[in-house]
Image 1 (cartoon, rainbow, N blue to C red):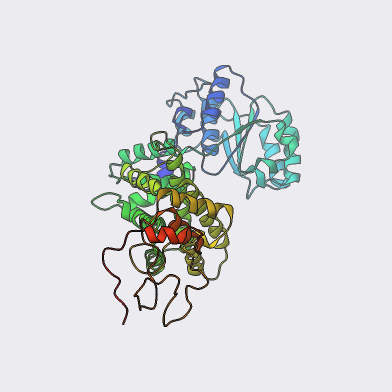
Image 2: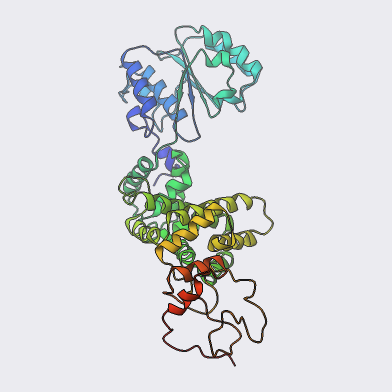
Length: 468
């Protein structure tokens, strides 16, 4: 097995192999067919999206014996020299402007540029990280870039084209590269894993694509790390989540279900598991925000997975569809907004655990806030007939006690205690109490029609035992 990094081993050798940049590769190939190649090009875009690779391919196309051609033959001396593992060509000079961007370097380049190529059609300068060239260096290059000899071509590659001075930029053909779409990148990574002969479990490739953030080189580096750590079973989902630091899907499912049920005990227990497990609270909140984003989309577009709006395995999409059906649209939107705000507040926070617990508390207590989002979230719950009483004693999500709820420790609240009860507290609003009882629970104060509703509510199946 070659010791080369994965992104070097599978570096494209022709424009047809470059993925996700058809808006650049197609015009370049057409220009080569028409033999209308400019003397200077500017390739810009995020890191790892194919700028330098495309510059090498363009040099290969220009110096091919059959060229200029959009498809290098791969057999001539120039094509072999500029191949993936070739020795390189003396007529194709790559310069790292980060360390050779001064005016002296530019003068040296200008003096050598007028000498003809040793054995190729063109002498081609590929200037990487072009934004690192100083203003004096660019000015020293200006004349040769503006009016180069016939045998000279320039290709500038940069992540920050705005830092290339306008006089240079105006004399180039500018091609902006973009991040590769997740679907395209996932298919490409699947093909690479197939060539490597290592099985990859469902759900791993979406994690790699997310870690790569649209950069082919970054995604290939992450995939290379996972393949290097693969065991007899290949790359498993558990190993990928542990190695990349992502939150397990089961934890996200648990916290979302706790939010839906208003189960504060379960939510804070999950927070404790996150902290005790050594997970980064910020990463957990970021993953939770990603999950809520998927739920918002699924609630609005039930077939989002088929349309490519969600990148997840089929079983995960099925679980998320069930979770999206439990929430209302306003509830999901409010929860996502609160988690997003909390993630912003966690930057530089001295106690990430405290911030995480506060986020959970805010999500589960819409009745504690009077803003429009919280009111809409409470209306969502009313429309769905949420059981505000919960399964056990104590107020559930959405219940705010009135001012006399804790009148004393001896007899409880006389207004809410059932006849004959000597316990210290009254049971919560019973399920099935009708809209009036639900409104009273949400508002935290009995409404004008709450007494008749409470009187008409069905009696509980078993009497409440007094606390002794």
